[in-house]
Image (tube, rainbow, N blue to C red; front, side, top):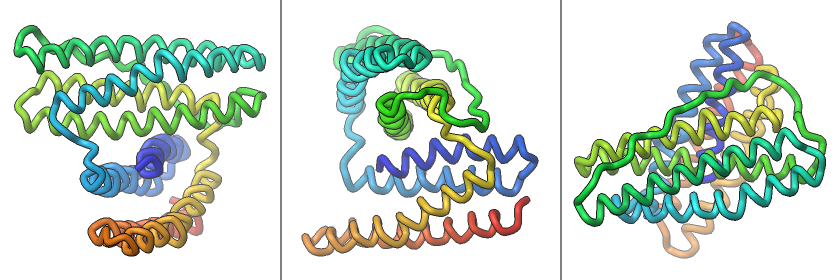
Amino acid sequence: MRGEAYANASYTFYAAQADREGLSATARLYRKTASVELNEHFREEAALAGVVGSDADNLRAAIAGETYETTIMYPTFARQAAADGDDNAAALFTEIGQDEAHHLAAFQAALDVVETGHGSIPAPPPVDAVQVPAGGPQVHSARTLANLDTAMHGEALAHARYTLYADHAATSRRPALARLFQGTAQVELREHFAGEAVLYGLVDTTRANLAKTIVGERYEAETMYPTFARRAEAVGDDRAARLFCHNATDEARHARAFQQMLDHPN
């Protein structure tokens, strides 16, 4: 699920780079594949893993994640970046940690409303979207770079989980809670993940992005998912085994489509 969420987030910004280069077909392929990674692969794996519970359970899970990020992860990353002389990353980690504290407070208030039936669900946070142009890393410490990678995976996973939580809240006839989850999901992707991606140097030229994407898709198709399928089958988790096999087939098809775009840019 972490890999699928990260692919969804990365492909979103690879698509924007393809647009900037006038490669509209490549941009469409990235967006279509990003949707598959989130709305099929991640969603189906999350269903087997029991990721989505009641609205109250989902809020408690979100509160736990936001508490960790705002009290431990981001303060630690900020201190380490400052110690390593990566002041830009230290400032970003500090800012995101403060944002997560606001998310935490909003989710805590929403949980009180859900549990008591009194009060109002907080409004969703505004999104200050960050553009992610092609460029190399803007930090010099290997530790900072590793922390950015960890943070991006966490933000991508939060975006994916909150998207599912929003859908559940909508079906539970709690539209205000759905808006809170969806709005927070967009902050995690388009502000936090994006800001970290700029410093990490996630986006390169479309040709380089395609080459990297093909390697990742082939790994999932040929190694990761087949391995997971064999392990699931060995312990009798047949539904998971079938899903992993299905996803491997999907990823192989994605790899071929991206290879075609690399061979014939458009």
